Image 1: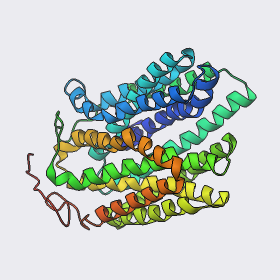
Image 2: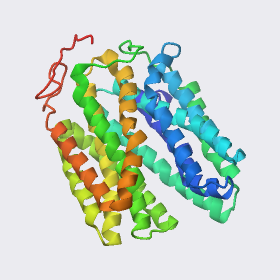
Image 3: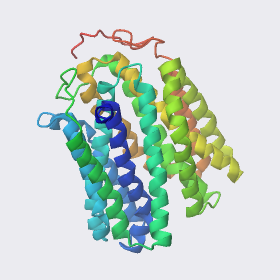
Image 4: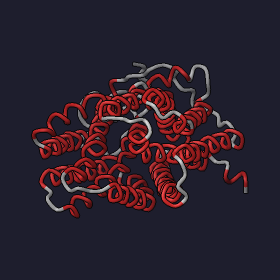
Amino acid sequence: MLEKLRKPEILLMLMATAVPLSFATWTTLLNNFSIERAAFTGAEIGILQSLREIPGFLAFAVVYLLLFIREQRLAYISLILLGGGTLITGWFPSALGLYITTMIMSIGFHYYETLQTSLSLQWLGKQQAPHVMGKIIGVASFTSIVIYGVIWLTRTVLELDYIWIYALGGGLSVLIAVFCWVLYPTYPEKVTQHKKVVLRKRYWLYYALTFMSGARRQIFIVFAGFLMVEKFGYSVKAIAMLFLINAAMNVYIAPKIGKLIGHIGERKALIIEYVGLFIVFTAYAFVEDHRIAAGLYVIDHLFFAMAIAIKTYFQKIADPRDISATAAVGFTINHIAAVFLPVLLGVVWLSSPALVFLCGSVMALISLLLSLNIPSTPQPGNEVIMGHKGLATETG
């Protein structure tokens, strides 16, 4: 029985439970904790959120760490940093304390997410990857539901202090990471990975899709929720309920989406996503009914699972030696938009919130055009329909 559980895909799902235990705890408590205990204003929270994105922007540095430590072990260490940074947050109720603990947590989170993508693409076969990656999203969503319930129980019923809730969520992440480290074997690399930054012309479409995916993520994370509060007056309880609905639907739907991608292929899956996003973003711009807006918010979130198709597209066209390095570079590219887009669109928001979402519609159209360039059977040497192509033996 134990040997059946010691499979790479089970390990990936187990590690996936560790992430929301910390990250959902951190994000759910952050605003209240920072205001009540650290006396944050908009300036401090803006600085903190900018600091939080820096490790994502520097994710490419993971490849240099792989010169000294195996990828699987680095994933465990990243989870321990994520959990450890969350665990100690409650003991440092000051601006400097939150900046430091946030950086520790964020380094662990972003580096683990980079490594999780890389390990998934290396360990999972091309046929099973979409379905298993959908299951991983579902497992993480289920864990998020559990942690939301625990936070409500500990704050509302048990009235525990922030210190102990942060310690509980972060501590459980650390325990899971240590458990995995001890129980699971070190799986050998099927192909030795490059230990340097890799940029290849034939991956240009993957880079472009990844960048646009990061830009679309900012529209949802920064502005969709803000619209719900500013325009429709949603309370903290109502927003929390939307989070719960999103997580609950992902538990069931994300594995189905992964299976669908495996069945219809990356090209059709991404076309469906971007047509849907164009409709959703355009509707955001003109919606006047709070119930319709809530429905758009839920649909918008469900489309995130379709991003699996970008990863599995890369898996099919990649030189197996490039997976670790390109996953790190891809994560950095994905976060470029996080550095400048919220600021630029925040200025636009002041004059026209609708225009922000129409910008999102334009992004969806650009992504749609890019997805139309994916071949029906992507593989090395057949990466795109039009534009630069390469060979499996290409070295630069």
